[in-house]
Image 1 (cartoon, helix red, strand yellow):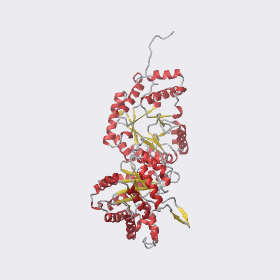
Image 2: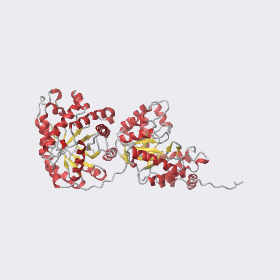
Image 3: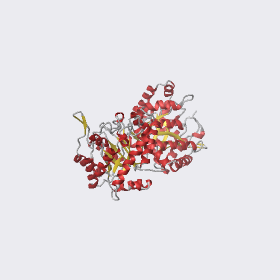
Image 4: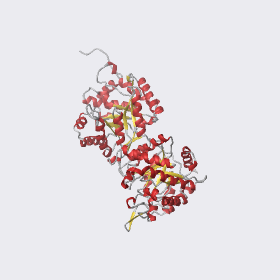
Length: 617
């Protein structure tokens, strides 16, 4: 029986079985409880009525009966009655001090029943249920740190009680899901134990999560968290409404697919909420999803009974899960949508104007604390074609962390494109990442002062699933030649991937360029060296992305000349393999709009085609 196994072997057992066959979760605890017509005394008094989680203390035999009903139906996995067992939710019943106890006891009840029904041929597993709480961090209902601490306590209790799996379910705010995942990672590290992890988002009838997150953004945000074993959907709708988003996961998600629909959409019958999907109908839909789309873990959410679970067990016995060949495209995301880190044709455009150091207008708005206009400025860049926005609020004499908090809190819920957080301070970057729901880019790391600071920032990127821009700067300064750019990039890649645990696809190298407008002899070949640097880096590290702050090439020139030179240089950089460019999108011109003579002059400058001869008199 699983309860007698070394806890480090349970995850291996679960994953091995998951590769072999479809696994079945249990059905709805709430629906089962409603059918029992429990009294206030069953809940321990009027003050606790409605707190289903407290039943594991006030009347544990009720929970045992529910577990038995689903185990008898053939479920492979039973969930603990801990959906709302965080101190945040339990505080509504003045039970916040008993959160850890409730999680431990609930897991032990499920553990005992699962062990009782386990056989060598059919082991039963306990999934620790981790719900969304009643707070949405993206809307400021709760801070990231408060939510993380609450989840830490819950996860620790579930692990102490003997859970085999952790199921972060019914996620409505993707920032909440990240807080739960980070709490799980921290508990794993503290206990020296890793359990299988399932994450399940809730997609409303609108086709997106409660705050507007589409399935692509959810997948992009969660994909960097390698502790996830299965990702899917539960609650809100029946199986029919899940098909389009399930197809997306089947084609794109690297994780096993988890699916736990309601027994149809809720209906109001005589003033009562009812779910009318029959077990035969559920059987038909889930057979299709397993056989055709590759679902691996199936179960029932609101309205599902032991009869529904029997139908799912029949599905698991009748059909094999379809083989999938998902292709995930490395991307970044906002709260709402996802943007690939490489577009065809390239480049991905990173808007540069929400930067207090580079934009006079943005700096003035920051000093005036005119956040509404700052939001409008960000929206304008997105309308002009920026795919991502670079955000920098660093300004001498101001509290950068406070300013970043004010800006990111607002941008998070209204700006549709992903953000790139530009700061030299680790604490400011962490502040931004705790507020941001999507998958961000961090700008940036380098080796100017050695590896210590780069490690700090890379650790934050790993923790929050962010991508990171790496500048080719080391202790000797900015790398000027292509070979030096490749050399520094190699050091950064080794540090990030081999030591800090990021992947090559998480890295965006900026090989840097210098202005051609100064006339300095030492910079005349800098554009050529940058272009060759891009080629070398892409050849040596094909999974990384490359980026340039394009406008640096023209610093010091007149505006019209800058627009032309920036546009021509960007064209050549893309041909060399550039994936992303920090630009003022509306100022970049297609080559056909630049007069031929101007294009030729720009090319001559970029490739240092000097002509020497006698001046005409």
